[in-house]
Length: 209
Image (tube, rainbow, N blue to C red; front, side):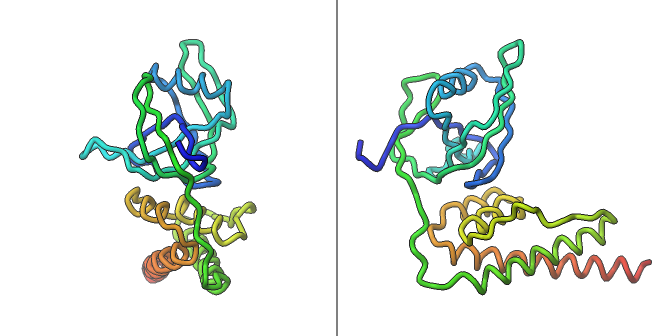
């Protein structure tokens, strides 16, 4: 095992793509994963989350670690846990000598961007504000901009992917990108379409009365 790789427990989950900084609450009921949580509680409190694809019965190779924030142990042994996404990784080798899956992983970071992200970041912020404003109008319920919205371009790109996307495959593609600028550009295109769709719905609501 190289100095840049390490072994972590793996938790494949259908329809779940975790991003750094995103919260992930889980109810743990399977004995093997209860064992996993109880084991990592005594260590670094980290496990890896991978998108599981039921059709192929395989998990994707790139995921994100979840760090245990809070654990509630129920009388029957089940667990309610709160985690937060931490670091992206790629599985280079799986290990199956325990009831739960483990993997040797290498850590992934975004490559230094040669393009200034300031313009596309400002564009995304405008879209987010418009989407929240239009959603508030359509649903007759105020939706406010989160106070803890990241200002760092990379963190913002992860927040958008984890919060404003709903299709796991699209989220996975963004998770796998290692260029902050390209991730933001992809997101800006999607948010532009979303804004136009909501604007049309808002106009229709005004017309109908």
